[in-house]
Amino acid sequence: MIEISYTPAKTATKFIRSNCMVRGLMGPVGSGKSSACCWELFRRACSQEAGKDGVRRSRWLIIRNTYAELKHTTLKTFQDWFPPHLFGGNFTATPPMVQTMRFDDVEVEFVFLALDHEADVRKLKSFECTGAWVNEASEVSWQVVRTLIERCGRYPSKRDGGATWRGIIMDTNPPHDRHWWFKKFEEERPKGWEIFKQPSGLSKEAENLENLPHDYYQQICAASAGDTDAVDVMVHGNYGALKQGQPVFGTLWDERLHVAPVKALILDLHKPVIIGLDFGLTPAAVFLQQAANGQWRVFHEMVPDGIMGAEQFAPVLLTAMKEHFPKEQNFILWGDPAGGQRNQADARTAFDVFKGYGLRVRPAPTQNLSDRLSSVRNVLARRFDNAAGLVLNADCICLRQALRGGYHYATVYENGSPRPANQPAKDEHSHISDALQYALCGGGEWQRLKSGQQRIKAVLQKEPLGWDI
Ligand SMILES: Nc1ncnc2c1ncn2[C@@H]1O[C@H](COP(=O)(O)OP(=O)(O)OP(=O)(O)O)[C@@H](O)[C@H]1O
Ligand SMILES: [Mg+2]
Image 1 (cartoon, helix red, strand yellow):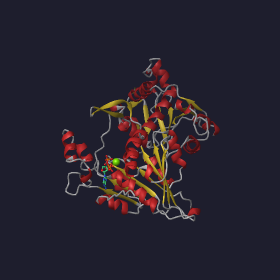
Image 2 (cartoon, helix red, strand yellow):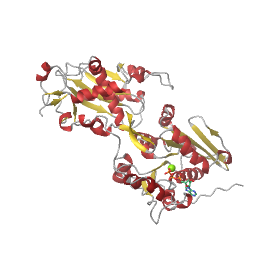
Image 3 (cartoon, protein in one colour):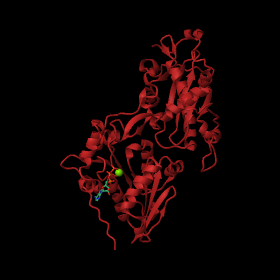
Image 4 (cartoon, helix red, strand yellow):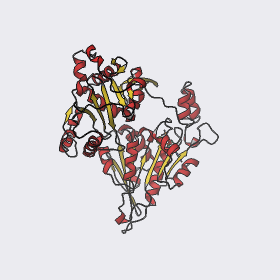
């Protein structure tokens, strides 16, 4: 007989003992967070009430941001504790990876999903599970966590007795203090949510030291060469200050010039409203119009709070078009040219799906990143007397945050030193930014860029601005 024993440290014990539906475990690196989560899932699987046939059935999702990390880190930790061959089940190594266990009266499935795998994310939306573990949750978007909350407690079905405990456990190194994790656990503190914070790796109470190399945290401090922010997060387990890569539009963005008071922008019914669309599972849309003087005016934005395929997004967009614009308004829709690729599940493209709702979406004329960014830069830099080439309604909060710096270059590490990548980071700011790029490129800015005509004609500068500055 083989015995696997696990004794959690103090904070992990409290985390495991809690019955809260959404629980977060946050702390320094190497403090035993992932191990605690593996064991908590296993423990919950063993304490699931048996169904009518006497079998304790449950199904758990294990989520990580990328497939590489899922396979080499999360799965590895899980199988270190629970080697597949010891628990009477199988392991399927092709994505989505699944480990089953069948021992005594327990029958359990652990499904490993990576968020950079389109098929995996699609699965997430309709998955029926008992609960989930989000590993390194700060790398995962709020939309995913929200969707997960809806999926928990769906297995076993009520008919078969229902889930004895349902919920989500998450672990992470501390994110920055503007992250959704901070907002939820520290500010909003929804009912049924609880956070468990481990002490500093250098404190008297430090946890899991006995399972780490000698002087583990001292060595991290020494290697971090005075980067006190990194030490604060990785060793002390404190929230970090928001530090992200270089803003894509830098000083081209000027809040005073580029933001118009709410309701100040005047819609021209004789001109079409251009809608820029980013598809994908966290879609976004911007609604803008080019005024007679050439100025781009952004009236509205849409960033759904949750994962949504084209099938759900199209009707929501249609409703927004009706709600926010007059009946007689004309629209031209420009979308991500990749929206023409077929969805593996039903062989339809996002364009087909929108067409089914009477919405004709044209593929934006380019996907070239440099052209798309230049198109936005040109309109941001453009001036008509004292007004800017692009203004947005102050209500467009997501686009505003993105343009003022949230949309930033990703960071790559070379020999441990950070440098900006030449691609913007893919996060909550990039989708709305992509939507704007498609709208502007489709709306004529790409052609203008290609023809080298980057300045508005002087004759147009006398046009009214559309609102009082
Ligand atoms: N209670 C325990 N008993 C024995 N070993 C443990 C225990 N908890 C953790 N470990 C071991 O300590 C090491 C670090 O644990 P784990 O990977 O769970 O920490 P972590 O906080 O998730 O680390 P990271 O910040 O790198 O993700 C692993 O080798 C793990 O097997
Ligand atoms: Mg871990």
